[in-house]
Amino acid sequence: MKQLTILLSFLPFLASCQNHFNTKPKQPNLVFGLFEKAVNTDTLNITKEFVLGKFNYKSDSNFVKVESKYATKEIYLNNLVYKAFLKMSEAAEKDNIHFKILSGTRNFYEQKTIWERKWNLNSNLNPIDRAKKILEYSSMPSTSRHHWGTDMDLNSLNNSYFNSGKGLKTYQWLLEHAHSFGFYQAYTNKNNGRTGYNEEKWHWSFVPLASKYLEFYNSNIETEDISEFEGSQFAKNLHVIEDYVNGISNEVKEYKQHTP
Image (cartoon, rainbow, N blue to C red; front, side, top):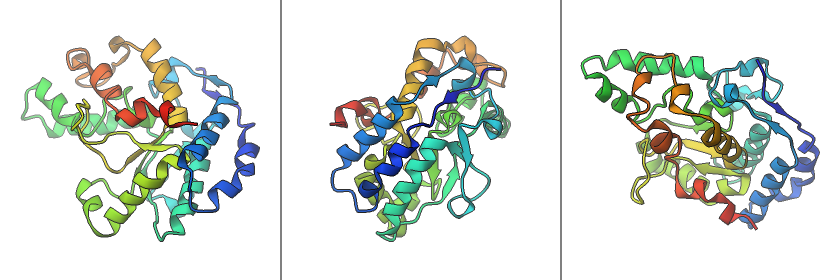
């Protein structure tokens, strides 16, 4: 099976940007642009197997294990995403904001376990309603951004946590500064007509890289590729690719407008 190959020759470039990240970001668009340029200097050999999550990230040199101080369990991220996260975390800690990654990369098989556990828990519903219920917060296998190592869940999996106290301060910091490091909230509220999953204040995506995977996904994946798990036959009727894979915030869809 082909693996995703990412040449990390741009890491020295990131190191050269140290001055931008050692101080509180004052020009978010500029720093974001630097990350985007770093992504554009690499070579991405993207495969269908990769974007569908059908690979072993633990044996893939493009993925790295997150240090235990930042993780609640064994978690992996794409190398560049982790570098960006560390820079963001360093800046946040200067404002007494601390991040814990609850979930990072999940491949097809891990997502299948989550999906089918919830499928069984909702056995009182008819199949189509079962799928809709799970899709409020969980992706069908082969449709999750977590497959790519670009997305992570931070600090709490409850929106209410981010509405007051420490959680609110953390969320406000992310809204103000995360863009500086390439991270965007993938699933905002639906006030502007966003489709798909409910709001997830904890889910942040490294858009400079994820956008390239999404572009490949939309050009190469069809609902017939979404298979091999309970309820997969409903992917087409539920417009999973149109409404869920692409049910992301307008800022994520239009992020290029924010670069210099």
